[in-house]
Image 1: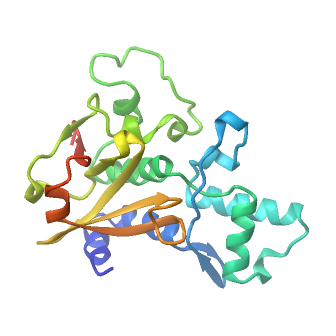
Image 2 (image 1 turned 90 degrees about the horizontal axis):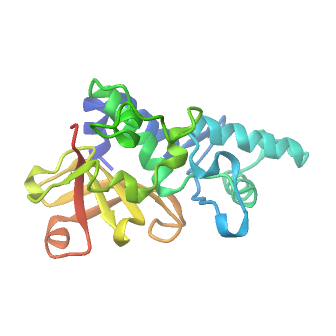
Length: 223
């Protein structure tokens, strides 16, 4: 989408991260990052718990290929995608959103979202409730869009890059990457809502959002 050209000018690091998820780099081949969410009730987990960065996901792919005796550099794009999926390598909606929003916060002059997300104002003295190696592990879609850390954006003309669309009662999250006169362009990771599953871009018409009471647009309070 042409809208990403505007994102690249405003927030180049966030743009680069998004492109890295959309085009995982395996040398001559690039593939879109698949969707993966841990199945906690069945004890089924994937590398980095579905919260990995593009670099971590690529590293996991090479490790899995080595275990299987496969030269990943000789695989075609669809073969790499199959390798990723059968080894539970991918990112869920909140893991993807966390890394995009964390990168964006740093480009806005912040120090990342972990402190404000897990230790809201008045609780900074508390002990962190997240593992230092990967704060995204505790960042659910519900928490990222909760009333504790976000405010609702009522006017669609006020929507900005980085605003979140909360759906399914907090079970899914989209991140705004651009706004036009008629549409809001978002990025997300999904098993069902994105074409073929995984990280993708989606356009919402403002008319659709205006008349949908099951969707709310949120912005971090510190932004």
